[in-house]
Length: 69
Image 1 (cartoon, helix red, strand yellow):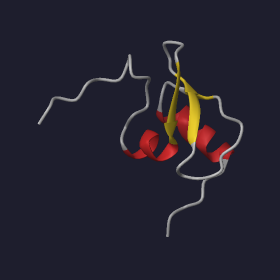
Image 2 (cartoon, rainbow, N blue to C red):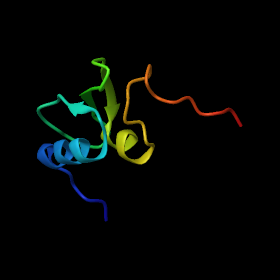
Image 3 (cartoon, rainbow, N blue to C red):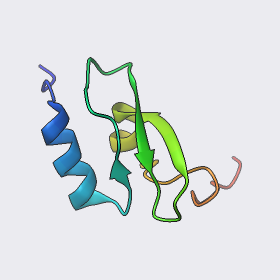
């Protein structure tokens, strides 16, 4: 069964596992986009699922591009 995350647990995860900062104040569910601030100062939105599982922890300007298949 999947763990149900709280906004405080997500904030803690973000601070320990990335250079970004969580700006959102509440978390409703896995499909909700959260607002983050990248280390470069750019705000970006991602679901927590993508942020955590897909290693998308930066804004689109700073995110390393993946080579095409």
